[in-house]
Length: 372
Image 1 (cartoon, one colour):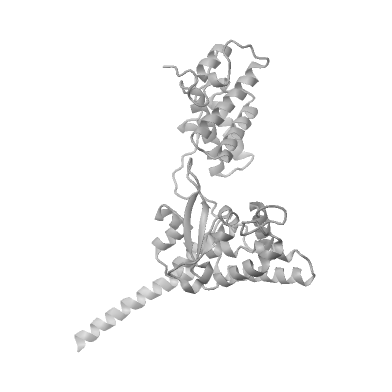
Image 2: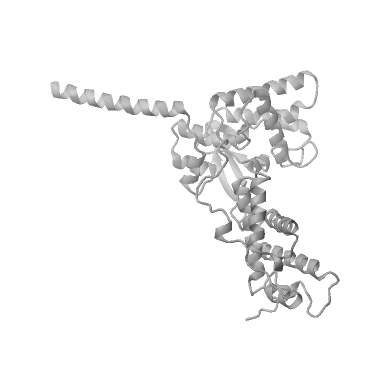
């Protein structure tokens, strides 16, 4: 059954029948990429995802120096092997690359889009699926993050934020304006509310508000995260994060009433404005964190996301209900929250000691009752 180009990304929407092409191979491949992009956009995928997959397909085509109707599984083997052995890419990165090529081949071979028929008519060959189970890695573990990634211990956290304060004081003592971004870039909010990097930078001043059940936190009893991590094809996931630590309102109040106005951010809704634009960029958050991490001699495995891991870990260690923690960080499954939990050896020792002591106390109480 032929749909005659009514499907987004179909060949008949990108190529006119009977028209001679100046560079047929290049033009057909470019049209296929355009159709692939349209098909992905029709699925409501983010443009960044679509562009990333398109760039991956282009990179694979350039590596094998062949067009899609010439691809073979052996080419994928060689490409992925090169990525793993020479470029030493992470497993998750290699899997995402192979999935991009798999998705493109699935699109190109689907009869609804008529690309296979078009290639057969023009070049005497047609694309096939070249990514299969036997030449790609299988995702078998819930957590495949780098083993170096971990939470920040409370001692490291104290040292880090002390260093942040010292840097602000040092820069300000020289009469330089650099103390303003130094104050802004201190990732206290990321730790205070367990937010991701992009969630942090996309916060507006209006996203902080009162919690009627926590009046002691004043105007900063909760944080409304409007740009949470989205599932594929879905808009950003929203959630409200309740303030849990008593020091958080004081820090936020100082920022919004004393420091933020000095940025000249009048009319700018961003909670963390940039000196040159609307809001701070993710790269800026990374660079500041890496500079402080290096100055303190901390592990390279620590990154900005480690504050989110620390938020989960420290709440669990302090006895907060796991379900509450799960809701705070916006995880759909408790198993995901457990991946973020990196309880310290001290916490495990205290937990073991508490249970041993309660067991011994129960045994002594039982013995005393029998003796009496």
